[in-house]
Length: 522
Image 1 (cartoon, rainbow, N blue to C red):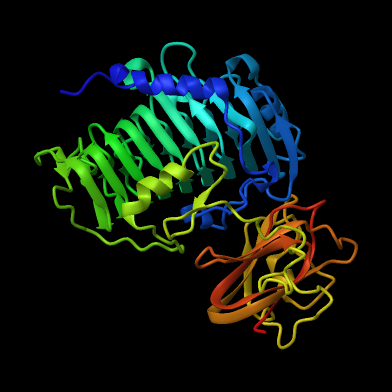
Image 2: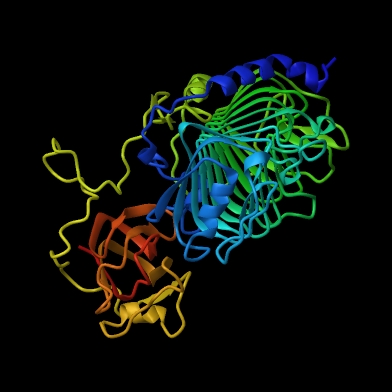
């Protein structure tokens, strides 16, 4: 017979109290935040870069987080907010401004974009205060703890969700987070990681979710099927009753997660959902995969998983467990690259990497946790490096050779100022230009068939030279980042065959003006 949630949590809460009292010192320098870059579905739809290229500010209260959001030039101005200390109801108030829409009872990321919130120093703990993402895009939350968020009792916050997303949310990467509760719905808690009402392109990586009745959901009801494209990898789910996650419609990819003590059910694919479940380790759990509590079935594709002391219930009208011998009943195509650790080493790898305060360590795909290396935005190579990396941009004064493939091609983008055209970047005329509506935006060149490209030349219009700050060059079809750095000019990368290439401006000192987006085969 299963013990009440409160009893099962007693020992875990004692451990939590000690950790909260002592704090955790990060082993990574603060500037290394997000060094390894987004993974999974968060790399799609143009990618997830958060506040890259923007101002970095420090916050020790919830009010200061809101002030940082409200102090931006616009709701899309990139910003990185480094958080240290305990954020709670006592130090969080509503702040007003043209670039924000905040609230007093939660950290509110509403109708904004291009934001990174990262824990630094001795750690960031959001105590009984949830993080709410609504009508927003390009958000990174990294190296934080969110605990004991309640929907009933006192105090309440964020509908009881540690992190909740809803209403047209796009491109969110939550990484190295610890999300935890102290019981289930009867104790006042809801989900740890919820997505609903048209939320897409989300990745949860290297995180710990524990001591909750509900791990999280994708879709708030059987009719809320507009969500999906979510990746869960290298996470620890521990002492969770159900919803690890609950998936209603859409596609989710779960790989290299460690599921331990799932007390009632685990991955619940229902209402037409598809789950790709690769090389996970399920331990001391019940009904870790299937369709549960509904007659509206979902499906799954399984490979390489280990089921260690897993029990399975009998099938019924509203109960369709995948076991005791889980087999695939669908196929799922994954558009991004990923490397699988063998399932046998997942418990050790996840134990060394998942959660806040782990130094942002990641797996190398060979069962060996690694400290992240500096990202491609670092200004100079190591002095001991005799030659530049092949992906390093060449001298901007070195002109490309061959034919400019952009002439006669198509173009589009995601942001455009009034009076400018995407076509201006491929007309060979330096007097015409495309400009985003603000300081950031994307412009693409596209062809009717696959075209080989290894070099681009971004040429700024007269009078705006030097405005472009940070950028990314992306293969639109796969979401792969071909190059990243800062400043306009010639950008080289290994030759790739594609139909559409996108130049994403993620930071600028003003409003950029791109006169020409030239593309070359060599």
